[in-house]
Amino acid sequence: MIREFAGRGFRVRAALACFMSLAAAAMFSHFQPAATSTAASRLFSQVEPVQMSMCELFEAAIRLDPYRAEVSERFAAKFAAESGGSAWRHVVGFRASPSMLEAWARAEGSLGVSCRLTYESGGPGLSQNQGMAMWRGVIEAPLSCISRVMQADAVSPEGAVRRAAAIRVAMAEAGAAARAIDMLRKAEISAMQGDAGGAMQAYGELSLLIGLPAHDIRPVVITGDGPARLAELVERALDADPAFLMHEWLTHDPDLIEAEYRLAQVGSAGSLLDAITVSAGFEWDQSSGGPRWQVGAAVAVGAGMIGESRQPATNEQMVLIQQRIDALTAYSTARFAGALGRLRSVWADFSGLRESGDSGPEQIDARRIVEVAGIAFLAGLGVFVWKSQ
Image 1 (cartoon, rainbow, N blue to C red):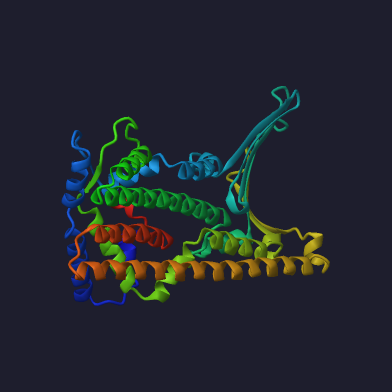
Image 2 (cartoon, rainbow, N blue to C red):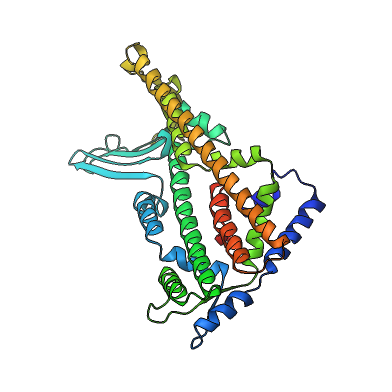
C-alpha cells in the first residue's frame, strides 16, 4: 500500500521528490536520540534505556491496545469462520427402500450459483431394466451472477463489508501507534525539562502501553530510520495534489464503503436478471451411449417485481441511502480538510523551529506532534506506516 501511495498520484517531478525526501530525512535525522537519551539518563541514572525501533514500538503498542483488540475481536467473530473454509455450502443425503435407491449431493455458492448431482436406481431384487441406474447433474446461476463475473472490477457486497471491517481494524491500530508516540513525547519533554515526577509517570504509562514491566520503569529511545521514513511519507503527502488525497481518503472511509455497496445491493434487488436462471446439465443411464446434455433457462418472477406497490418503497429506500452517502461524504470531506490543515500547521511549526536553530525541547516536541498527526492522516489514506517499517 505504501509503495502505491508513494508511487502514484503525486504530481511532483522525480528530482524534486528525491530532494524533498532527502531533506525530510535530514531534518529528522538531525535529532538523534542523544538529546533525549542524555536528559533521561540524568533522571534514570541507575538503569539502561530501552532501545527500540519505531516499528517495534508500534507493534508492541498495537498488540496491547484494548480498543484495537475490541475491533479485531468483532472482525474475527464476523469473518474468521468464513476465511478459513470454503465459500460453498454442501448438502448430501440418500433415501433407500426395497424398490429404490436415491442419493444426492448439492452445493450452493456465492451470488446464487448452485450445483446438484443425483443418482437413482432400482432395488437389487428387480429386473435389469427396472434396476437401471440414472445419473443427473445440473449447474444453475442467475443472469445477474454472470453479469457480475464479467465485470472484472465488480466487488460483492460481502467483500465490501469485509474491506470496511479490515480498514476499521487498521485505523484502530493507527490510534494505538499514535498514542504511543504521544506518550513518548510527554516523557521526553518532561525529562528534558528536568521534571522527574512527570517523566517517571509518562515513562511508566508508556511501559504499560508497550508491555514492559511496570515495576521496572526505564526510558525508551527510538533507534533506526523509522522517524526519517515517516517524515518522508508526510512530506510527500503535503506536496501531493489535495484532490488526489481527498479521493484516497473517501475511498478508505469504512462508513462510505458500506453505504455505497448497500445502495448497489438495494438497487440490484428484484431485477429481471435475478429472476432469470440459466442451467446446464446432463443425464446418463446404462442404456445410453453417452450423457445427454441439457441447456435451458427458467424465469421466476415474484409478485413484488410485477406489481407497482413495492416500487415506490424501493425508490424511497434508495433515496434514503443516497442521502446517507451524501451526508457521510460531506462529513468525511470535512474530517479530511481538518486533518490536512492540522498536519500542515504542525509541519510549519516544526520547520520554523528547525530553521531557527532551536534544538531544545520545543523542537523535539514539535517533531513528535508531526509524527502523531502524520500517522493519523496517513491512516485515513489507507497508508499504515508500521506495516512497512
